[in-house]
Image (cartoon, rainbow over all chains, first blue to last red; front, side, top):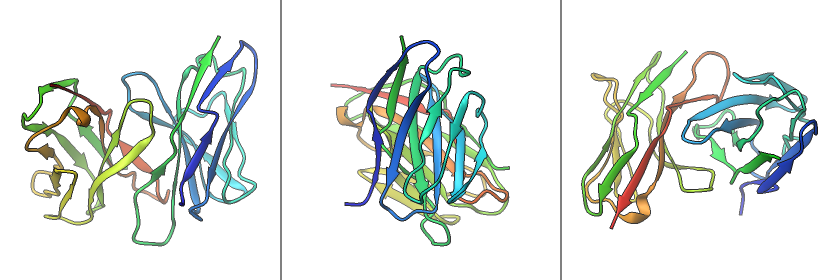
Length: 114
Length: 114
């Protein structure tokens, strides 16, 4: 079955540590997205990538970094510069140039700072 | 860009009650409109969509009609179940040049009691 996988499901970070969240898709989608969700709140866009080797900042990119070296992979690094990283992180993807215009989501990674 | 305003929650209902969650939008043209659902601890799933004015999207007993006159896409269900307890998000394409980027409402938490 095609889909989006995120790992790990739960992640714990110590103060001052960088951590990397994995997002992989086998849907052959061109564009991929990272969102942050805080308790009781909506989704906020961190970064997105519409094509390999290219990505753009979203609304809350400070303290995060990404790479897009392969079409199927879009890892997110939460750096020590992100002062309040505890949140639920969601990865999504979409196919370009078709009539299918909805985003597909992964199951999420819950990051907690100890 | 496009924007969406979603009814604030939380919404608490008894089983078999009627559900309405309001969603209004501002958009250039007539983009697709979406309702996503997020069950506890999971990612978002597409619940239903409508691609043009007067279209009705439906799934799992939920319905929403794309009304351009009132720029609305309200979600309804005639008889809710405990298993419908989740967070519901209204969404539409963000507009502009960023293909695939979506704008989400803030989400409405629905709790259904037996």
